[in-house]
Image (cartoon, rainbow, N blue to C red; front, side, top):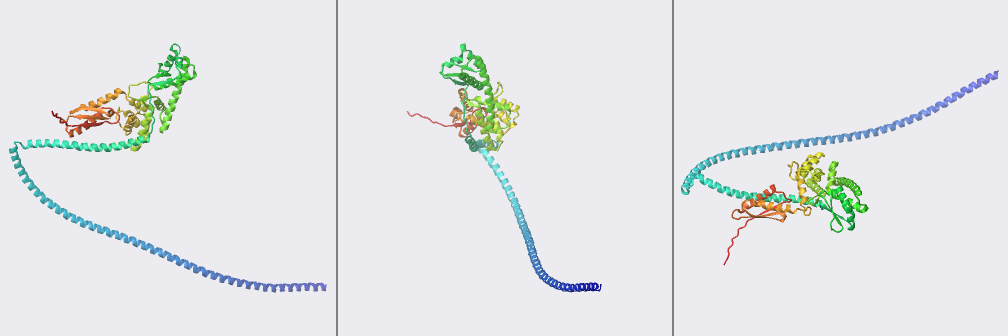
Length: 521
């Protein structure tokens, strides 16, 4: 028991000794760690102090640089303001100086004006005095002249006025003639330029259509088959087509005669199909003619559509498209109407472009200007008015309507497009080879030109030459002097322009000569 207690006591003493030892070792370790931490803290504080000093110096430098920058900017702003103020002060001084100069000039001008007024007053007084003296001297001279000439002052004045009138009229005519020649030259040059440019930019083919179409056949044997027994086939063909078929001694040819080119074309194609097929009898003829008529109607519409597409025209009424297509089978003065209308459309569009007008409307008016020439039923109205009615019916523009109706002066021109279309129509028709003239109308036009010149006093003879493009007028030298000849040329040209219808232009030349003839024997 004692041993146990002694053992327990020994154990307790050992544990206590161990605890004491461990505490002493821990205290020594803690002191070492605290010393080490203190040294580290001192190092950190030292490093932080060094960094803080560096940062402080850097910030001080930055602040100094910013201050210098702001100071320089401020100085620059102050200098700019001072410069601006100096400029304003300089301008103000200049304006002030100008005002001073102007005031001095004004005062000088006032003094000069006062001096001039004074001089003018003096001179006016002198002039009035001289005028009174002149009037007195003139009255004395008039009395002396009246006594010498046995003329009163009024009579002498009247005679002088008459002589001055004649001289003034002669000079005025010469002046007017020179002005007109210059204006005509300039106008002709400009017009020629526009026309030449237009013609150069437009190329067109011409197709000459007649009232008679020729149908060629391989042999005269086919003629008999076309005629048929007792002429039944040819009568059936004429009844179905409305075309006169002429079968004569012309070898290998049959003539189709009709003023309606659409009917002629239907008859020609029908004959071609019948001859190719070989079955020619009245029932077959009616069938083929009906099919051909439908084909031609479709082709007319197709031609109209193709034409407006080529010209770039949009929104045209279907009936007007059909009328345009019918132009292909119509001729006017030997000129194909569709080709003529295309020419007029292109020429009018080119002129409108040169003059700054509406090109689309000009082209539209040029294409439609002759639609009155292809009526399905005959009308008593002129083709220009008939075409205008159709265009109005199908909703065309008012300027287009006026151009259609006025291109032959049937109505008054109210649009700038109207004279352009009229000129384009004349250009297309007046081109050499475009049209075939009827002999009677050609001769009548020459006679009308000569009669217009012979209606003036002093004209002894007149001759229309150059196909009616020039009129030579011979006057009596005793009745017409050189000045009156120039005026006579102008009057004749005005009368031709106002009263006659002609393509292109007519040159009027007045010839005056004096001949002295003696015979030596």
